[in-house]
Structure formats: structure tokens, C-alpha cells
Image 1 (cartoon, helix red, strand yellow):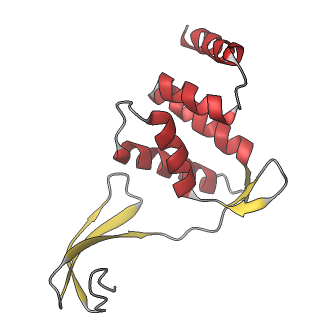
Image 2 (image 1 turned 135 degrees about the horizontal axis):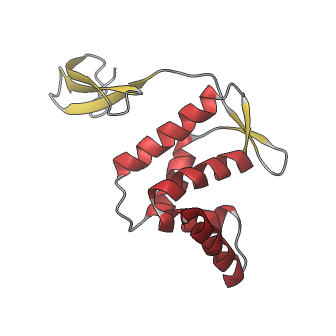
Amino acid sequence: MFCPFCGNEDTMVKDSRSTEDGTAIRRRRVCTKCNERFTTLERVQTRELLVLKRSGQRVPFEKEKLIRSIDLATRKRPISAEQIDQIANKLEKQFVDSGENVITSESIGKTTMELLKDIDKVAYVRFASVYSDFKNVKDFAEILQTMEHHDK
């Protein structure tokens, strides 16, 4: 592993532990040349997932893109970056476990919305407003009405 500070290729692992969700190993490393410390994450490489967009285009699944959209929906909500990462990991695992190599952007959006609905209602509405491309206040009213029926 190359040192991100000086480029030295000789680094030592000082500590290893599994992440909370068990999907990766976090390694604390130190450079033998400059003594700087840094952290690396080691993950299992899964088969490549493709996303089928509404336009018909197929693009590689990017978990970082999913994290950004969840982060936008949960901004100023009591949800930590670690929780967002766990949500994204859970969703990615669900997509991989489905056995499908191609997942529609629609199913990604719907699955994300369903997960957010159980975690934070405000984040759910925010995500839904972007995913469903709300055009006016009536669209918000309809989804809020649906949530009220769901809660009963």
C-alpha cells in the first residue's frame, strides 16, 4: 500500500478491525518513511452491477452516487454519515443479493424510498420529491396523504 503523503510503498498495518456492518475491514497503517498514519478500507469485490436508466442507457452502479442522494435527503436531519454509509451498504447488498446484473434506476429509487420511509419521514419526502420529480405542491400533498395511510 502506497503512503498517500510521501508515496513510499512500504507501510505497516498497526490495527485491523471489521466495520460495524461487517462489509469491510478497516486497517490503520503507518508509513515506514514519513511516519504518517492513514486508514484504508478493504472490501470484497462483487460482480459489476449495471443500472438501466430511463433513457435506456446502461451505466455502472456507483454507491457513491447513492450516498450523495441519501445525504441530500437527510441533510440537517439526525442521521450521521456512518448511518448513511450503512444504508447505502444495505441497499447495495440487497441489489447484489437479488442475483440480477442489471437493476433499473426506478427500482433503486423505490427501494431507497422504502428504506428511508422507515428511518426518517422527512428524508423520505425529500428523496421522493427529487426521485418522483415533483412539479407542484399537490405532489407533496399526495405523498403526505399516502404516508398518513401507511402509519395507520
